[in-house]
Image (cartoon, rainbow, N blue to C red; front, side, top):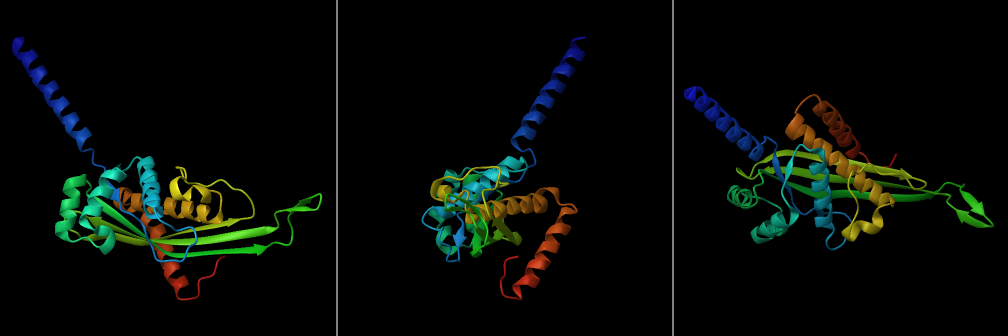
Length: 239
């Protein structure tokens, strides 16, 4: 009897240890999002916006439940020490150090490579006692170049350009699961804010597909990429 009880105790201890190990390393990719860069003349871009976008994408990835996301402050301190902000590149030795100090297996970098906004009159709108309420339609387009860097090897494992578009003649509800804050708080209900939301959701969904699900969802993104490349052969024009 004593022998049986000892075996049960050992089995329970082993199960507990295994469960703890699984909780510590649950199979989800550990990921950090670096400060976004900008290659456009977007009027809403200013000091601090790069880290605001980083935080917004981090929140979106965390909300999916499929990633373990490194805290912005922890990552920011290490990246500034490694001077990644200036170079935009990660060598194998630098990546390994970033991974060791932050616990991130992967580092996501994002560059806003295109932004365009148009406002046109619709010729309509509402009026009350001679005061116009509307009559304009705004559109915005945003493209983000994403790279996913393996912090062990320094290699770029995934890269993709994702797009976000907005078309608005009034207030609409965005699909972004987080909120706007910091330097972008005033853009939440603007065409720019809606395009940002759309692009970040697209970025999160792509990363989830490419890094976690790895199934037929990539067919959709490959088709989008082909369409984008074909569109790049012509002058950019909003639908």
